[in-house]
Picture 1 (tube, rainbow over the protein chains, first blue to last red):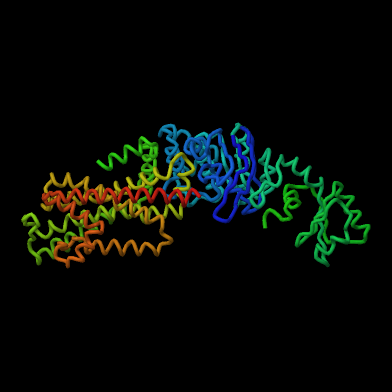
Picture 2 (picture 1 turned 60 degrees about the vertical axis):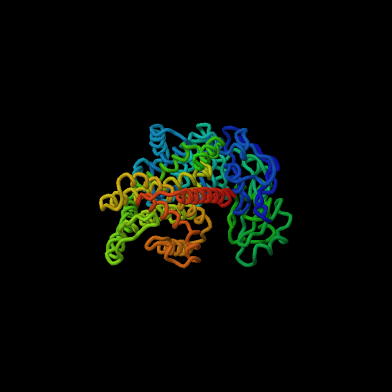
Length: 304
Length: 273
């Protein structure tokens, strides 16, 4: 579906995407995980054929995005980072009007619009304008709009950023259903839980480069330990404990508010901390996540 | 003929698809139907030139008396001012759409970003928006022409010919307005456009023949667009056709072509970075 080699995007002096390689197969749910400014959205805009690559090779649906942009875009569904729904139209018209941009005939557009509103649970809002809708509803409408042309490939740029937990879960559930229908999903996120929930395979991006690639489980197994212990100390800053706890586990990462201790045996590591005579004010042993992978790879957290 | 040529070339070269241009117009028809606010705007846009015609054309006209045109024809002052008001309403009708509304969609509600994620291309968006602006302007000018015929300021036959001329005026001003809107930084810049529009409104041979100005001023006015629109339409509604009108038509066509070209280029550079 997507093939990229040495893909680069520059804006003047600034390099947003710095030579990335990608391959996305049909039916896959593929994610770009990284902090703000990692180059995720620039990559998405190139895949969406609105932004020209500065260098490198890019093929979408086995076509050239520069020469065959309209033909490719006709088979893509795009859900942008910030909603750009039409405030002058009703919820229903937002879908039917958009359908016309794809050359979908009116009766067919109406049929699909009704079906999609059902799918994203907005049927009762059909005649309302967009303004009074909640953030979660707008997002769902954006996703419905992205589906109006029955796309082969759906691009979602930070689909749940800014939504409350309930709205996020509803959205995830709908996206999961799309995936089950065999729709290829490509999404960006800076939430590791989102990446773990939705993606079969993902790349971790930082400063325009891909720093790791694989399934969520594979990434955690390769780059992190099985478990992570979070230690908080009341007296001294976490960094002061790095030396004192040296040798316990495989790695120690001091954050401003806590110390992360990577070990395949979390409880054993905690016992060792106590044996050395230290008493943390709080101890949490948990499974390693993609957040830890990102921290290990880049030295920074995903959401600042 | 130049337009027809340019349009057929654009269609043949696959630059614009009529169906996609139609889809852009369809969006605006939908917006018109959905909100009562839009109808209010259309309503007020019709009355403004009518009020000018009544106050100045008829009111001041009573003091001014009749005017003698270049071809020796004697007409009432109201018949002199009316075609100018017609040209002005074609201009402002199209400009209202391609300045305020266009800018709002371009910068704030991101209508065009949404459109560009579909098979639509910048040139198709620009063409669709421009045609819609022309259609909106023609709602004003069509109504105004009916008023003119009813008041005996032109004949029904000349009015039928003047109607398509107002379309051209709308296309020309709409295109240039759209190109300008892509450069606008914020709402304060619209004051500049309004000021320019008002200066043209006062001096483009609207209320007095330009021959009454000093020669240098006359030349300056002959460079500005509204003058050409007024002269073209006045020539038609007063029934005094001349070869000079071809020049006015050409001026307006070039204006439209340049405006459209710049607007679609700018849509590409700003939105498809």
